[in-house]
Length: 560
Image (cartoon, rainbow, N blue to C red; front, side, top):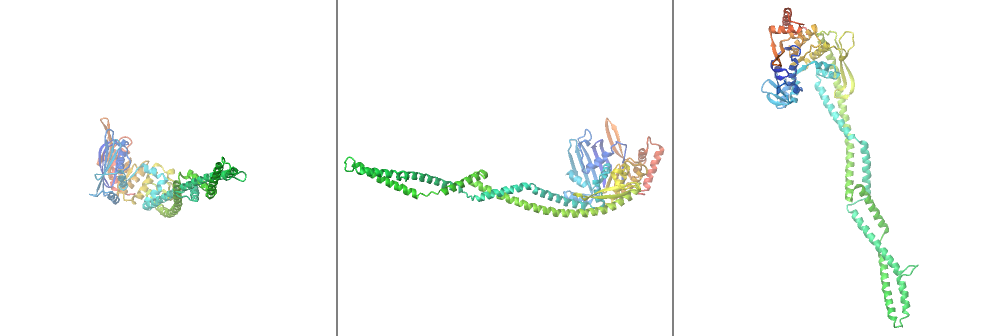
């Protein structure tokens, strides 16, 4: 329960300390006096977003301090989980907003974060403002209302958690399946490269050995060519005699001159030359005949070297680099194969999760349909006490694509007049009807949560007369077991409150000031009279206000 609210340098409020009690409390005051600032201050203490423009002009910072008693168990649990102890049954929340845009939070005097404040704030106070009426016009919000009434929040949250898992599974599957065509082309290329390198039967020193063999074969070819030429020159051919043949002829001719002293030495020299040349020719011929040179082998080696040159141009500058490329290709091919298996596994996992989520969505939809029927009946009952006896409520469920909300959307339909079919709220509800429908929903939900404090910001918008009194009686009834705080422009509602606070604006020294004053007795009667007066407060109006206040005391909650 909210016990006290301290405000300093917030907008036009320089300093104010407001004490709150059990039951129903109303804030009244002229338009523009600053009633909304009190709501802004409470929102700040609940962790809602605030800006530096809320700081009073000329001040360095704004300070808001809210004190709560009878702390809900959920808040205690969150505080324990975050390392905050429980010294007493009082929680003091402090929020400071600097003029330069900074913000600090303290819980029980200890530093805290805005996110933690926001987390516990939802279990401390429920603030209903005019924006809630606008949210009622949005069909997207209706499922949340149904879940709250049916106590389905935990089931819905469990479903959303499983749906989040499904979304991650689908994202993982999509990531694995991206570029399947490109992967297919890559696999074909890798298989071609691996096959080509395997067929080459490479080894680390292959190129060196082939070069050595090629060099030796090239040398053998040169030797064979020279020996062949020399052999033909010395031994001759069928068409042409060789040097040995010619020298033999010369020796034979000179042999005829041996009897002549002048030619005998020459004849002997030529004969010796013939013998030596014949021996040389025989040796060269033997060497030529024994020389091993295989032209086919030489061509095969050259083909292998050309093959290596082609592979090096594609896969690397050396045999080692080609072999390294071969190993990398095999690793990549294995990785792609693993990805395909991973994709199949991911698809199986996603399908299993989708089946699970679909089953949970069906269960959730069935529970929501049941809750919606009960909610409609409860809203109709509550509306009867708010001058809407003909209100009919239905909920339209429509199948939708599996999403975070389930597999069905829902929209609450109403008929405010007898004989008219239920239609979307946004199309038929007036401002006053919308306020009462929202209050009927809040009343229906009042027993479904553990919030001790409900705040209604101008719930009476568009409502007056008897309807306003009915709203006041409904708030009074809720205030009999909850703390209700209401900002109102209605005299009927103000007169039914247990406590009334006046928000009054004044000027001094060229500055605007707003103060919050508790009202009792005649001061309260004067304020109630001012609210419903059109010009000035008369004695009759004062008497009427006194009667309204007395009536409110005698009939707490009657008729609601």
